[in-house]
Amino acid sequence: MSQAEMIAASEGQEAEARHPALSSYAARDGCLLIGETPVTQLAERIGRTPFYAYDRVKLDTRIALLRKHLPMTIALHYAVKANPMPAVVQHLRGLVDGFDIASPLEMQVALDSGMSPRHISFAGPGKQPWELRQAVAAGVLVEVESETEVSRLAEVGEALGIRPRVAIRINPDFQLKASGMRMGGGAQQFGVDAERVPQLLGELRGLDLSFEGFHVFAGSQNLHAELIVETQEKTVELLLRLAQHCPAEVTHVNLGGGFGIPYFPNDKPLELARVGEALAELLPRLTAEMPKARPIIELGRFIVGEAGVYICRVIDRKVSRGEVFLVTDGGLHHHLAASGNFGQRIRRNYPVAVATKMDVPSEETASVVGPLCTPLDLLADKMTLPRAEVGDLIAVFQSGAYGLTASPTAFLSHPQPAEALV
Image (cartoon, rainbow, N blue to C red; front, side, top):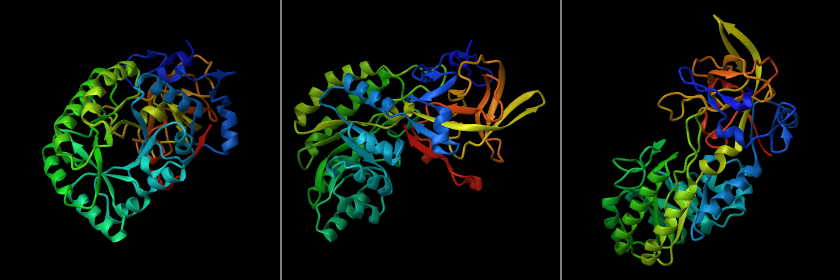
C-alpha cells in the first residue's frame, strides 16, 4: 500500500485508508504537486524551507461549492482571521461578498484588497478606542460586543463628525454542540447576552449611531450538519424575537458559520448540501420580518483550510531506543495547530506525508519533530510513513487556516516560514 493510500492515526489508533485531504492532491514521479508545481520545484522557487503553500484553484473550487449549495440570497463573507495573507485575501476579494475582520491590521489588508468598507465588518471583544476610531474613519461596520463599546463609538463618532455604523453581536442562550470552540451560550467574553439586547437596542435610539443589525456566532469547526441546522434555526428564532425592539430597519444579519473540515482519520466531511437545503427553508421566515436584510454566512476555515499545505525539510534522522525521529526545520513555532497545542483536547495527528516519496510504500513508524528544545514540538506522532532521509520534504495537509498567524513564531527565535499562493 502506498503512502497516498495510508495515513496513520496517533499511537493506539488503527491506520485509516486514504484521508480526504490527500484525495484532492496529485503527485508526479512520486513528488507531491501543489497546483501544477512539484513541491521540490516550489521549494527552489521560494528559496527556502519551511513554507506554507496555498492553492488558488482549491480556493476557487471551495467557493464554487458553497455557491452551489447555499441559497442565492445568502451573502458569503470570508473571516480574514483564518488566513490574513494579503495575496490570499486579494484573491478571495473577487470571489466572496464581504470580509469579516478582527483587528485594524486585518482591516488594512481587507481595504487594500479593494473590498468596499460597506462590506467589511469588525468583530471581537475589547476593541480599544483608537481601534474604533480607525474603524469609524474607514466606514466599516462595527459589531459591538458590550455597552462600553457602544458608548465609546458614540464618543468617537461625535469627535470625528461621522455617524458610526453598528451591529450588535449577540451571545445567544444556546450553543453549537460538538464544536471545536464554543463561542456562544453560557457566560462568554463574546457579544452581548441575548437577554440584555432589548435594553441596549432601546439605548441606541438616543445615540447618534447607525444601527444596521445583528451578528450571532455560536461555535466553530463543526462537522455535523444536523447540529449546524439546529443552531441556525435557533438563531433565526432569536432574531425574530428581537426584531420588534430594533431602532431601525435591519440590513445586516450575520448568522455566523462554524463549518468544519476533516482533520483526523475518522472525521467525515460536512454535508454542505443538507445545510444549504435547511437554510433555503428557513430564510423566508427571516426575510418576512426583515425584508431589507441580506443574511450572511461567515466562513474562514471552511474556505481556506484544505487549500493550504505546510512544507518542511528533514534535517536529521535519529533512532532512539528503537523509535525513529525525523527532525525537520519546521515545528510548532510555525504550525501550533498541527502540534496539537491549539484547541485539541486529545492530541491527534494531522494528515502528514513524505512529499518527495508519494509513490513509496509506507514501511516504518516514525515521529516527525521540529528543532525546538521542547517535547511539544511534534508534527506527527508515530505515524506509518515511507522511510525518509535527510533532505526529504514533509507535507502537513489541512494547513490553510490558523497556521502561521496562530503560531508562536518568536518562540526560541528561529526564522519565520515563507508563504506562497500558487
